[in-house]
Length: 276
Image 1 (cartoon, rainbow, N blue to C red):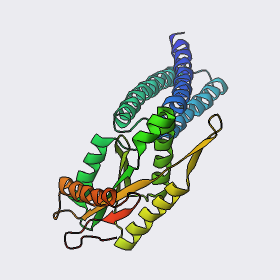
Image 2 (cartoon, rainbow, N blue to C red):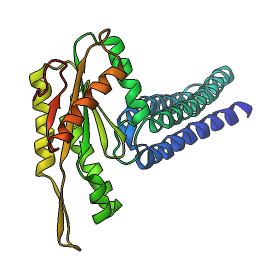
Image 3 (cartoon, rainbow, N blue to C red):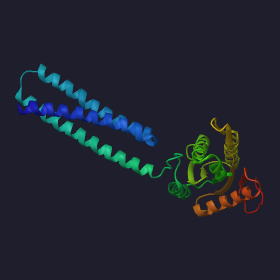
Image 4 (spheres, rainbow, N blue to C red):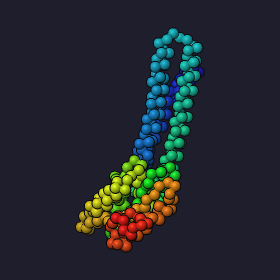
């Protein structure tokens, strides 16, 4: 009788573990969109683990009933199935704790509006790249032109839409190793890795062209807002420049653009006054 109870309890634990995963999967889709692919991949592995235990459980139960009545066999099976089910649910609970910790950490690194890295994590990423990257990298500061006026005239909701649209354009032009972050307000940082100068220039001009072509229309006011931006670019490699130095160079290049009419792209150079 005790063995049969253990088997039933094992089945209940397995069913409950399935319920936990389905609940977490629903929560994942609602709250954890940023890491959905990674979480889904890990979840799928553990779904297969649960399915394996469940199918094995059904097959063994079938075998028990088809086999000759053997008290010893039932004892072994009940113990294996019960403790196996306990192992599964403990693993699931630990996985959920781990995933929520990972998500919480990741969310602290992400700007909630644009879904790009925030200033703190962006700065850390630049330092990390300079630590391991020997080839030159390009750090570009993208600063939206006259953004304060847009907020004052059209309101902050319109301003937020422009920031989101800018982030989409930035992300669409970044490659695998590249990084985009919202550095604050209307300022974005782009880090281009393993690129030649011509490639970096082409990417930044592509972003500039797409920004110029975008306008957000608002039927209620019968107006449209065009997005313009200035770009200052610094260049360096690990061992030859610090993250602070790279930012300062990009900032100097940005100042050059702002000083000369805005809405332009300028690469910093110590030897040339105008480099683009």
